Image (cartoon, rainbow, N blue to C red; front, side):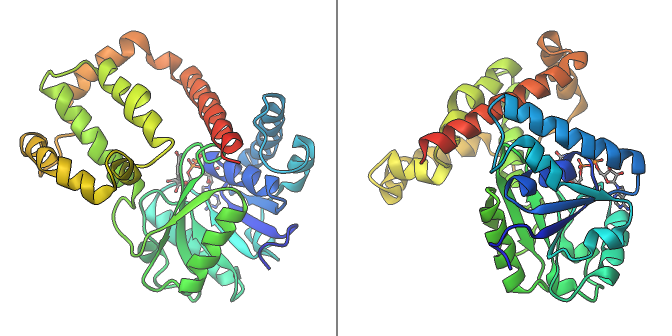
Length: 318
Ligand code: NAI
């Protein structure tokens, strides 16, 4: 059962997220088996994970136990879904975010699954009730949503449907903990899950501040990179309140009224995001320092910085 290593995990879809899961599970001692409908992609994924693990090893970012090549040897691939699921106790689906496709793939997995196999989806916004409600094994399905790049950002949102067996959500949560991810469990399904609800509230206010001419795009981003983001990488918003006064109740007594007054002026019951005119202005400003052709380099830089931060947090917390 869980906790004992060398168990097989099925990963359905070998793109960006599937490869990340494979590397994470391999580092934790599991035997991930990747499946993809695109055979060329499958071999690119096997080669890609091997190269990425070796790069992480050279850069001191490799997670888990064993060398990069030992970890890569644990990752297998197949072009048969049946072979992929055969003998696995846990399936992590990672196909593109499309309702009909998720329904189709979950239908196929359902017909091959054993009664105790957990079927988890990496879906970013689709809930299990929208693609798994008609399945024989629906009580074994749920969403386990990672954050990009999952190898360095450990949060996983576990979102059970009403029909998900509570034991399945609990087992998935402890599996995520065991492999070094950081799970949270939503008590019920909701649109956007949790991370994006917070992210959208934040983007919404950034948009609003830009639109009203309060700050430049560069300065708005600095609020997070040199202010809130640094703080929230260490303690969350609720603990911040708790620490910034003598407990959270004291914080509310001191600051809640002021916060409400601020929000009377700034709070928009309807989102203000994504009007074309503002989007064009922000794009122009961002492109003056970060043109589109430099985005890929910047993504690589970002992942390296996140790796350093994750390592710093792990090393200094033990
Ligand atoms: P991707 O496009 O990189 O990879 C999807 C893979 O699925 C491709 O290799 C494709 O060939 C394969 N595929 C397509 N149909 C298939 C089928 N019927 N059976 C097996 N494999 C099939 O997509 P990505 O980014 O890895 O996303 C996968 C899932 O993870 C999506 O639900 C997405 O919303 C979610 N997700 C993505 C994040 C991101 O930042 N990219 C973050 C968190 C979750």
